Image (tube, rainbow, N blue to C red; front, side, top):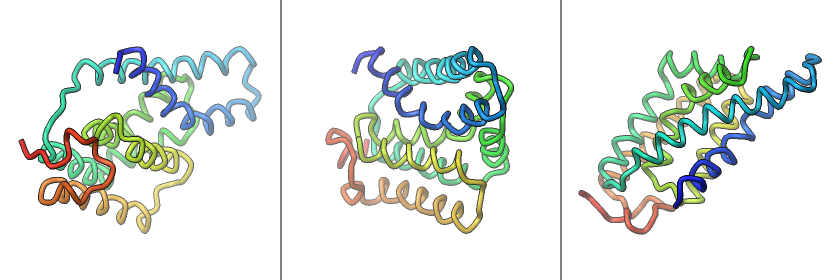
Length: 177
């Protein structure tokens, strides 16, 4: 996958998450010219993140992917995650700060997406749905804790029984190195 495709994929995946913030700006009476600037700055954050991911990405083992998934699941229940998630669902002065808060909210989920296979449409859709829902809904322990445990369980399965995890990219499936 080329760099332009990678950046485009990240933008397409993260753009819907900006919709609630953009809608809040429009409803608050933001000047028409500020909305595209807000969206552009938000996408600039994700373009930078995607470029860093593109250059850092290397195929890895299911053990490494499992460890990343476990870390992502544990991050879901940390105060830092709650802070970034709250800030990501609030109004931000600029698209850049909004993008940074949203990146902090879903950084480990995005890392998990990369670890599970950047070309896995199933995992891309699942993680995009989680990120989008977390932008719309306030934190709720009765939802967030089971989600965190489910992510940790996926990580454990990746380590002990990788063939049982659906949607892995074929070169990774069964790899233990």
